[in-house]
Picture 1 (cartoon, helix red, strand yellow):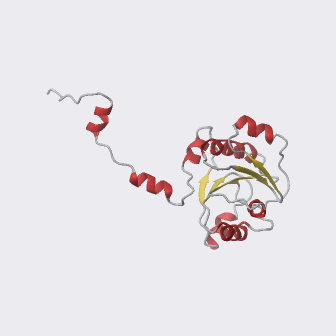
Picture 2 (spheres, one colour):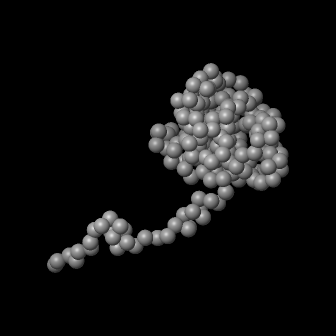
Picture 3 (cartoon, helix red, strand yellow):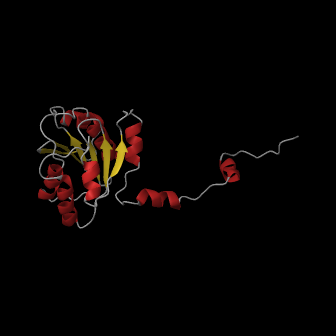
Length: 196
């Protein structure tokens, strides 16, 4: 699920949410949901959709209102939708009910696992979730985008997202190391001794 904050200070997260949803829609094996939220959620099934298709589906979305990311989780649970990962595009502010840590605990109980959260932190209001999530004992991976981003950054960051909390570390550890001679052999090159 991609949760994009569309509260009053977060108009710029609409496009970023669409971009991340489009990337995940191409890469994910299951359903992909794009949920815009302020104090109310708006859900879109973007499974298999391109960025252009998602932009067309969401062109009426505007920013305004309060900030309650917990309502996006509550919407998934009410519809009995189980997801394996959450991308949260936001300034990481949480000032409305239900509070995100509380909604996350309820959702985790519903799906019977802790769903990894990948937060894409944008500029905006104070990031209250940076304190409330650790205080609640909930892990959240934060990609700090306060300095801005380019069109290469989002796909690169999205590629690091895994449904298994430590999946990327395990993939890296399982990758066999190559020796220089093996790399050169694969490139059909010979290692020639250097004449002195």
